[in-house]
Every structure is written in C-alpha cells, then in structure tokens.
Length: 274
Image (cartoon, helix red, strand yellow):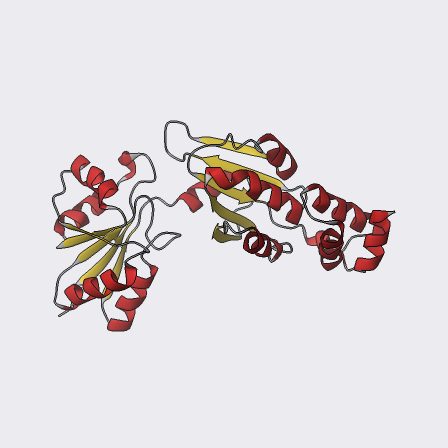
C-alpha cells in the first residue's frame, strides 16, 4: 500500500500560529520535503521535531518529485512544507500534488496560515468575490499584459509582491486601472505588521522611492460595473489621461480607454493630443 502526502501549512511570521496538528504531523511522517531546509530546520528545532528532511523546490521539482513519489509508493509518508504559508499557493508543491493524484497516492491537507486570505480579511475591501493573481512578472511587457487583462475584472484582486518591485508595480497598476482603492498589507503577523489603506495614485507617488520593505500583499478594488461604459467622450479622454500619468504613451492610453469605454480609439486620441 502506498503512503500518504501531507500538505502542511507553516506560520507566515508568528510561530505561535503553528497548529498542534501540524506539529504532530511533522513528527510522525517518515520524512519532510522542505522548500529550504535551512529555513525549515529553525521551525523544527523550535518544536523539537527531529524528522529527516529532503529539499524540494522549483529548481529540483522534477527529479526530486519523482524520488518522493517512489518513496510514497513504497509505503512511506511525507509532509511537504514551504518557507512560510501553504504549499502550492505561489510556492512549490503543485507538481508534486498533481503527480500523486495521477499515481493514486492519497494527499491530505493540514491547513495553516495563508497570506492572501489573511490580508484580504483585514484589507477593508469587498471579500464576497475575489481573484488571486499571485506574483506579477518582473518583465515589464508581461506584467503590463497581465494587468491589462484584468481591467474589467469586478472582483477584488489579490497580488503578492516583492518590495524591490513595488515602485514599478504601483506605477503600472495606476496606468492600467486608474485611481482605485488599494490596501497594502506588509509583514503579516510579524512585529512590524502594517495595513496601508490608500489609492493607487497616492501609493504610486508616495512609494516610488522603494521605501516599503518586507513581505507584501496587495488587495486591489475591482472595477465598478459602470466603468465599462463612459457617459461621454470627455470621460473616456480623462481615463486615457490617467493612463498617460501612469506611464503609457498617448496611443496606448487611447487604446485602453477605447477598450474600456466603447468609444473609438481615434476619437479619444485626437482629443488627447489637441
């Protein structure tokens, strides 16, 4: 009989959030697959867990995943953990879970803290419907294409972001979405936890210097239902001007405003340049 894979959530900051069930699971499995064994060993030492580890991350996921599956098929049990939060959610683990499913290996969840849901809950923005967009690309073109695909998205949007990318991300968000509400949640459950409720225009200006540090989750307000159609051509031109302020060319801004409002790109562009 094959073993079992446990997907175990670990604390995103405060170690007191580690559940008794998670501790028990890590103590009882045959081995632990960790994103970074140097990080996980600190957690294991804190809770006096002595289970052996193997590394499992995006750079060795194919070869190590095959090895883990062989051991599971031989009857061993394994817990997969990442540096913080729930595996498989913008973290390693998804390919391993998929492989286990294909091989008939049982997979169980041991829930733990998740930055996306925790940030959404304290953002002050609508929580009834939302979409998780993960990390944006470091490539400027890919990042803008991703954001442009969400212009008409009416659900609250959740993004993960690294501090050194924040200036460009906020600038591109303002260019794509105009001035919307945004909550910037940093250092969740840690000593310097902070919730910044602001607007894209203010955030893009205030944090252009890269002053925000730590682990960051962005919660962005969705598009208003009426945004899909501007009442007048002047509304469409104003929308285009907001995109230009965010860094787009007049032509690109006119194109986006046309897609959102339904007015012709040429008409918007002529009014912009005049």
